[in-house]
Amino acid sequence: MMKDSESFAAKQAALSKDMSVILGTPPDRDIHKLFVEESENFRARQDELFRDLNKSEYVPPVIEPVPPTHNPLQDINVSLEMDKEDVRHVLQALAKMTDMNLLIHPRVLKDPPYISVSFRNVDAATVFKEILELADLHGVIQDNVLRVDLYQEATLDLGFLETQITSSFSVGGDVLGSANAGDASGGQLTGSFNLNGQAGSVTNPYDAIETVVTNVMSTSGDTGGGQSVSVNRMTGTMFLRARPSAVRNITKLVDRYKEVLGRQVLIETRVMEVTLSDQYRAGVDWYFLRNNLATSRGVSMTIPQPWETATTVGTTTQVADTDLNFGSKGQINSEVNFASLSIPAITSNPAGLALAIGGKYGLAAVDLLKQFGDVQVLSNPSVRARHGMPAMISVGTSKAYVSETTVTTTGGTTTTTDYEVTTNTVFDGLMIGVVPFIRDDGKIQLTINPIKSDVSAASLELTTIGTTQLSLPQVDLKEMSTVLEVNNKDTVLLGGLIDKYKATTKTGVPVLSELPIIGRAFSTDSESESTRELVIMIRATIL
Image (cartoon, rainbow, N blue to C red; front, side, top):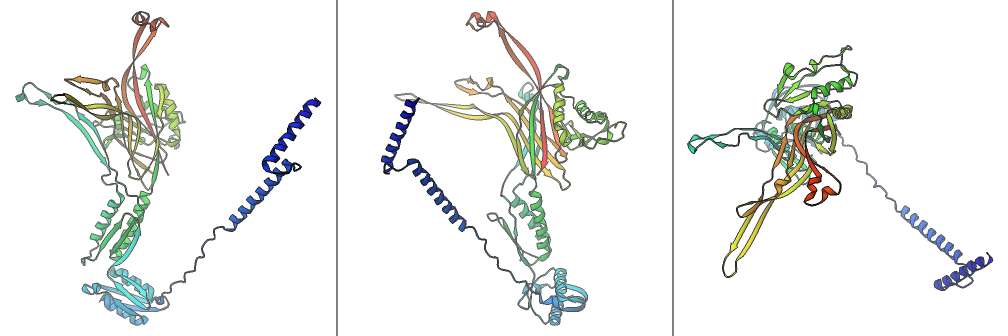
């Protein structure tokens, strides 16, 4: 034990000696003490640096007080009464009574309006303001001078982000495929159905506000031709020169426009796939789902059949809540807050359904879906959208395929063959287009267009046609279009997009079934057909 202690002390002394040589310190100087001193010096320099930084703190600039502007007319009371008199004469009389100077722009002299006024012991500032508003003139007081003009100039702050978004949808297509009925003289057998729509043809806020402002100025009744409007989209400002009444109306319109466009909504989606059980191969029973959702929350009611109380609104048929048969309490629980059950009319896909339910019972609806089959959540995307601006949610894969192959052969002493291949892409997945419209009462109108496409992987393989090879993608397309009105934080369930798919299951003896050639004798392939329904849950929350 003593030997180990002596060995450790010898190693420590040798280490101290080596460090003294490296640092250039005398042999009798304690290395540990030297490190402590250097650490304290470093901390002292760090503290000094912090003190210097604190000395240079930001000092806000001193705001000079702005002296109040004094209106000399406020101290003078006048009495003025004139009937059907030229506004110039009324202003001259006011200037004389207040001992003020008067300047009237020549534009006012061309066609001066006639007014009737009657003031008794009213301050001259109010009289001047009312005369200008009555005659639709603009006036200011500068250096003891009343200046009156026909037009008012104003600069308005818009603050919009210039965007250009166009949203359109198309549902349907050629139903019969233009089949020939015999020879050319027999004509063709054709049939088609299309549902087309466009949400917001002009979504550029500057184009929209400029059009509205121009219309307001054109209806102001001015014939002098001196009105003008100029929009600077880089700075987000609008310059106006117009009659004072038009400037007031345009200012209110711009403020309202900014307030509405500033509204935003959070759109949360949950895409689910329900593998239907044998009992519900026809799809989710939405009446049964809604009735059970209500009874599970303490409400007893039955859902009427759609042909009993249906009213057609646009492209949807709505079943009103007033037709519900309430329980013994005589009233529905307000917390459930059903909006409406919308069933597409004859002009759309009869399989598509939309159910709007109260905000906090969305998860309960998901749980109730499990009784119709196995529920699998595919994705949970969310997006923010502004009022009237289209939003797109896309979940899937873009798959490339060969759409065109060009073969060019050049002859001569040496034959050269060039191949030019053109590729395109096809989308495999789900796209949801949503356009929100947020009303003043807190209700939200949603234009919803879900499109589900399934691309057959085998169809993307190259197919030989003549001497070229192409891909002929086969796409299974399901789409729906609906317009709903919901409350804030309500949840919308969209369903009815049903398809069938086949699954091949291979079973066999382990190891032996994997052998080449003879492996098939020890294995079997079984096919099963299942029915799936795509259910989309959308929740809209005003921010």
